[in-house]
Length: 572
Image (cartoon, rainbow, N blue to C red; front, side, top):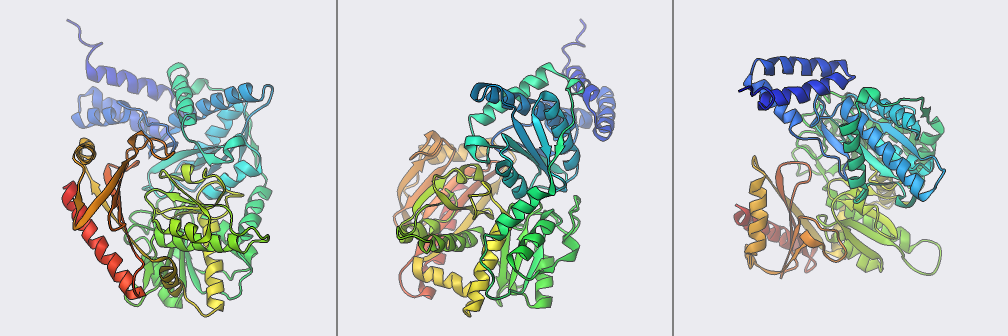
């Protein structure tokens, strides 16, 4: 009996060979050709590698696409990107036909300094233009916030940013924004589902080599200048100059940040020279994420040399911001503030600006943060009579809060100017923070003292996180199921008051695999699977507003230690 047609390896080889035939990239084509040859010789490692690359397809969702650059449907490459471009074009053309018959949809495309970002962007522009969409490519590699700004500034129907943010060096990604009524926010359901269906249709029915390509436009530099002008306006004229250090972590942030700081009147910072130019290899860091241990070591070194009052770090596509301040108790002499700390003080700044805005109606607007971020922002909103919104994780949700004047998430993402950008923006956030520190310095106050003032006014908030990495994703499913089926009555020494299960939606939030555990002492625990890694993530928050500042800090910190101990015992 001939089993050639049903042999799993032969079927896999047929799939891989078909992919090879439409791959326009010499590098991934050569890589795949070697793997196919090895698999034909029944090399177990090659067969396993092909299964990893072709058994699944890299999913397109509300985060767009993101993955390792390599050949195969489960990797980032020119075939996958071309299919995504054609699918997105089909979606935009259909939406235009339904909503504005006779109109031509448009897309603006940006790219960062990662490997293949430029070629992925130009492929996208040519294919979308070939499909009949007006395609506009940003003039050069630029930060993600510039692309998010350009969607609104140019009145585009959509935006595409080719970036993998702070992922490992060999990753790349594809973020999609929608204009019009979405106001330049990242896509959410059901749009992501509809776009994914069009991408799959293209993959099933067309070869990449058959997709029409056409000439596209290049945006003028005036688009970048408009972003610079709008972002510089976030800060007030400096009352005092601040000695600071800046690192781009080998990303694309510095050129635009330099122009913004200069336009806003701030003295240029001391640069971490080894990390200032875009470099897709990220040679000085193990992982190009300012949250990771060691990523800011060179910045600390530079800061010690100039006795800096502030360290400013952007991640590689400059949509996130990290801040560090002098701390004699820290081994490096500086302490990186958590995203929650920066979010809280920027939220306080936004509330103050709203309260002192012209008019006699008092503060107006909404402060918003993701459900896993500190409750401190709600305390600020309540104190100023502002609305507060907690959203699902991701700026695709934070940016959509009605009446938003400031939003953030604990993973170093901040939105300080929602009137011009509807995504996290590490450059405008840096201007806002630098402007705040300048005002504080003029009044003889340090940022550390300002954090103490926050705790004295709103209480001391302590936050922690537990990340449990697994090799089998069913382990996470089992933990979540156990917590739902046998909810804890106690966590450590604290009694559980109630548990909110967000899996079917809750208080207007869309369904999400999240448990919110509220304790009788006011502490809070959030439990959810990571959306990007094989991890179970647990977020811990405690609060104290009783006694002196030292007593508040001690009480909240002690409660956090106890909460951490109790949750680790609970999740095993």
